[in-house]
Length: 153
Image 1 (cartoon, rainbow, N blue to C red):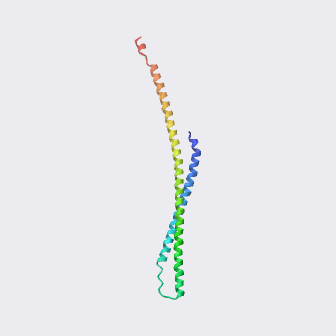
Image 2 (cartoon, rainbow, N blue to C red; image 1 turned 30 degrees about the vertical axis):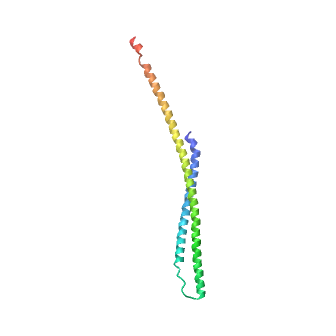
Image 3 (cartoon, helix red, strand yellow; image 1 turned 135 degrees about the vertical axis):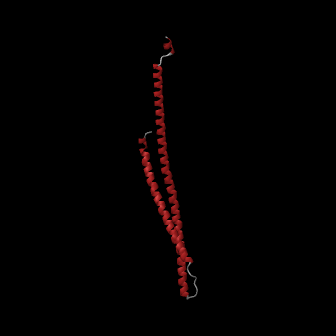
């Protein structure tokens, strides 16, 4: 396996990294929108809860008061429902981002494994070459050294 064979895998990694970046930005936007709506919902709830109780007044004033309280209550419900929706969107964005991070990491691990295999293959070739050189050196040394028969003759 050569490094040139990894070109396609590196292209896949670039695409997956871009997708991960996009999903991270989407998650950040969803979380930001959720926080914004939570603040609005809390402010709306405070306005509703701080509305003074109706004391005395005419029937017309009471009717206006009930319309105001009903509108404030509906606003609270709407804002809290918007928070629930954006929370669901943020949860889905978080899930997708996690999958995209995992996809990038999978490709990176595969590239690392291939690089490790190439290093191990290179080390095996170097070891075999060193063994051959050592064997050649031993044969030369043996050929240059006189044998015991040659010494006694």
